[in-house]
Amino acid sequence: MEREWLQPLRNQWGSRPERLVTVIPVRETEAWLLADGEALRNTLGVRWSDADLGLPRRARDVEQISDPKKVLDQIMCRVSRPVRSHYGQLGELISLEKLREVPAYRRWWDDSRVALEALGFRPI
Image (tube, rainbow, N blue to C red; front, side, top):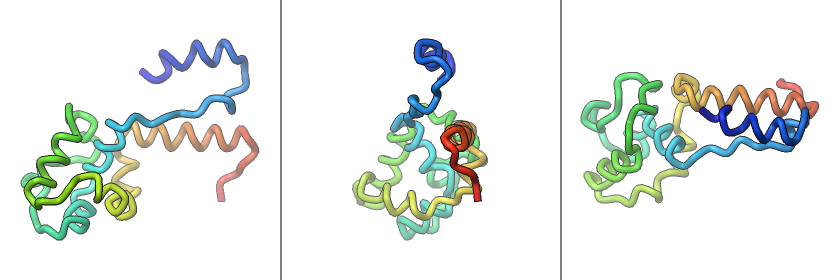
């Protein structure tokens, strides 16, 4: 999907992909926050199961949640805490292994790596 609208920009600017930066929609990052039930439990200090939290059984399935913000809001209402105040903490605790299972995150990771390598950066 991303490539459908991105390709005309690439065509217009020629072979200079470093001028383009992939932007991650908020909806995707909200879904990504639901990929790691353990991180969510630790952030909130609860012992609920993934099912109790309303999380899918596999991290890669978080993208199928039609309204991830609503799921996050419902979880936070149960613990009487505002959802946004925990995004930073949750982002620090979420497992990168779990995130790599999420297709959109994996695409972003791979695209970012390719772009950085094109600019002369090399992985360590």
